[in-house]
Image (cartoon, rainbow, N blue to C red):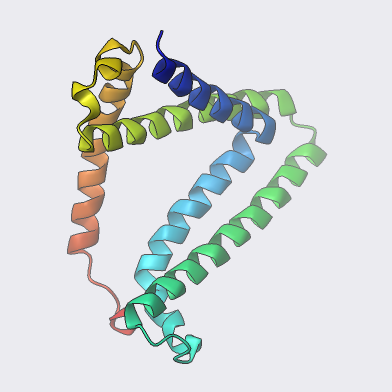
Length: 170
């Protein structure tokens, strides 16, 4: 195995450990919070922009600050929701072992997605011609994941391009 193989394996293992420690419930609520937050940030940042009061001269910067504020608010709300749900699960007597096992599996999938996106970046930078890339044993698996992710990215890109924004966001 090459150095890049160890780095890729460490990324998946660390993600698995974080998932196992936090548990499936908190991990899934956190992921849902990020996805909903990103969607809401792009859809409704225009509602937040007027409340910035013209503090930012650059309109593009103002739009990005509004998006960031919406995203941060939703992520904080999902963190609170995740903590409350985790508390309820602990109080209900449901086994934390199953939650942690599923969290570990969730972490493996998340790690594979991270590796897939890293491989996509490497492919975009044309690193596939490098000897260390060709010698890697794990990069072919990452390339398969990148191929799957590329389809989802294209679908998401088309959806965003075709979706009309509300009047207040334009």
